[in-house]
Image (cartoon, rainbow, N blue to C red; front, side, top):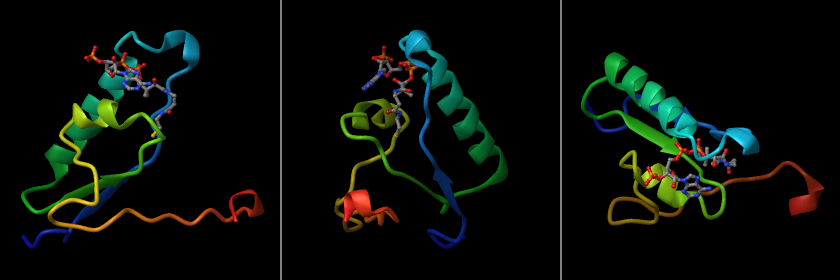
Length: 84
Ligand SMILES: CC(C)(COP(=O)(O)OP(=O)(O)OC[C@H]1O[C@@H](n2cnc3c(N)ncnc32)[C@H](O)[C@@H]1OP(=O)(O)O)[C@@H](O)C(=O)NCCC(=O)NCCS
C-alpha cells in the first residue's frame, strides 16, 4: 500500500470539564486507534489538529507535530469573519 492511500481524520476529542483527568480521553483515543488499526494496514495516514496546548495529549498516541522532516505545516481555514 502506498503511504497516504487511506486517510483518517480525527476531529476534536472533548471530555466534559467535570470528567477530565479520569482517563476518559485516553479510553476514547484507544478505541479510535484500535478501530483504525482493525480496518487498515501499513501506509495509512491519520491526521488531526490539536487545540492550543493539547499536543502532549495526542503525542501519547504516537502523533507527531508538523512541520517535520516529512511534511510541511498543517493549514486550516475558518469560514467565519471572527478569524479573518
Ligand atoms: C484533552 C482532553 C480530551 C483529555 O481528556 P481527559 O479525559 O481529560 O484525559 P485523560 O484523563 O485520559 O488523560 C490522559 C493524559 O493526557 C494528559 N492530559 C489531560 N488533559 C490534558 C490537557 N488539557 N493538556 C495536555 N495533556 C492533558 C493527562 O495528564 C494524562 O496524562 P498521563 O497519561 O501521563 O496521566 C480533555 O482534557 C478535554 O476535553 N479538553 C478540552 C477540549 C479540548 O481541548 N480537546 C482537544 C481538542 S483537539
